[in-house]
Length: 212
Image 1 (cartoon, rainbow, N blue to C red):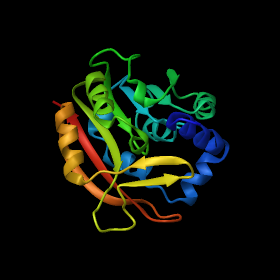
Image 2 (image 1 turned 60 degrees about the vertical axis):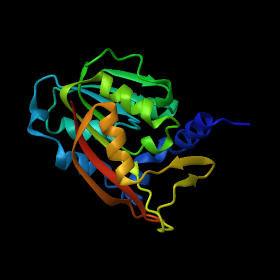
Image 3 (image 1 turned 90 degrees about the vertical axis):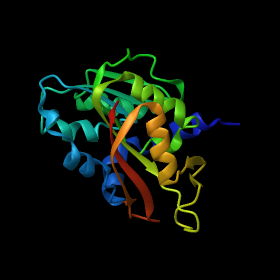
Image 4 (image 1 turned 45 degrees about the vertical axis):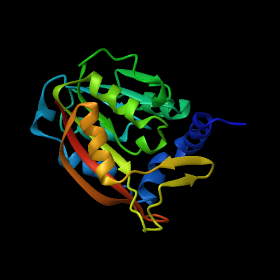
């Protein structure tokens, strides 16, 4: 029987070759939201960015239009997504692993910005993952993250759902704010929006935080 990590890996390995088209067809707003909300510190020379669930590198590619000196590290569970990101030539370091394994490759306070868009719904121990993100984020560094939104009574926002065999975890806004604060982040903004509308609309909580 496949474990959850194997299921996720297979799902994204299968999507890697056509990922950009899938993002466009699903009307996924994550990359545009990030680009519109990064702070002016994005212009800092040699800004160190950690991209969790990096996929083919779409988020870092967008950020490089604002600052071509960014030094990016990408992490993804899918070897084929890592291959696609490698071909893009925009990362200094790429690591293929599950985020449930922690961020042992990163030293304390080593990144100016951490990104986790469209991946945290797959994490089994979300509290550990957020604490690891906070550990490697510099003081006053930014954390951009999304969480699938649980809204009791809304059938389009269940506590758990599936993409094929892959289980997603969703959270109420109050849970997300508490988890981020417990990990060591100060939440600057939180907004619930439809993350993508291609197919069944999926509500997400989009958050911007700073390391305390």
